[in-house]
Length: 125
Image (cartoon, rainbow, N blue to C red; front, side, top):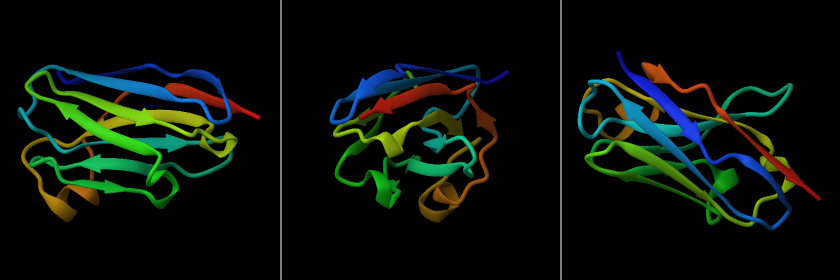
């Protein structure tokens, strides 16, 4: 059984930084398509960054230049480095993974088979 566990969330002031981690447990392809999503209260879930099986990335406009997604292999740990945080970044952040090898749009567009429970990020003025 595959399980994703996020950590690293917290409360910071505007302009601060946080680093989120997501560790994959269980039998999954060694370089899965993985990504970070977020959902703020009253809003739909949105993609933050997706990393495909070859390390290709796709970022949402909201995080470009401020957020960096990376993956550690073979541990299958996914990271999200967030800098210059603003209150609009406040949300629950989720890690997701797709089963098997996926590249490009087949990764970026989902679907994703596995989801973590989320870690809260709160940015104050």
